[in-house]
Image (tube, rainbow, N blue to C red):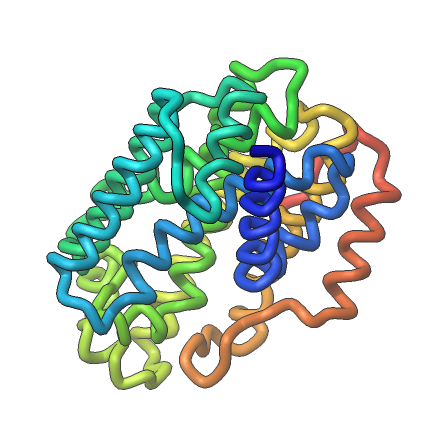
Length: 295
């Protein structure tokens, strides 16, 4: 059993390293014993996402069936039944170790299922409802692992950080999501700037498109500002990790601005030298020092 558990954690670590470069780097700044638990949560969310997105050659009904079967295996594992899966034993173990809220996982899986049928969102409230499951609950899943002197007060900033990270991804990945037939910017925002889905699909940064993306960057920064007070509520040993993740994801927005809001010609990434510098500065920052927000 222990060998299977070790292999499951390693599978999650591999997924994290391959697909979550920014957060994988930040995770290294946590106490070593916490690493595998963060990898487990990332592996769980990434694998569900792959069922939805990386099997596009299958019809939606077949992808939905795969997600349903995998979700059923997860629920069976929660009941203590044996699970024949390469990574679920790791997340089930992590849930047990930290007594994580199972409802958060159910909400996440519900939103993954939405991706099989929903391709756009009419209003920002509609998008927030989706991000509640795809991002905010990940913040609350992580909170017991990171630790906090005041978990109740830290919960809302953790949710806000999930929103901030997710919206950053949506802005950066507009072109990639369009290829999957999805638009994660609300229709009400597009209408506000006179932009259509076809305008985005052309990949041209016209003045209306530029203003739209500028606006979305501002919305994302509001979530970062709401999340910032939560960093200093975390256990001291976890603050460097989350300072790093906060700065590097926020740095993606800086890169988008520096490229004059062109998210089509190249993918916005923070240079490796900058990433290393941010991690080192976070390590040298004393716990309790407020997180700086803004560009």
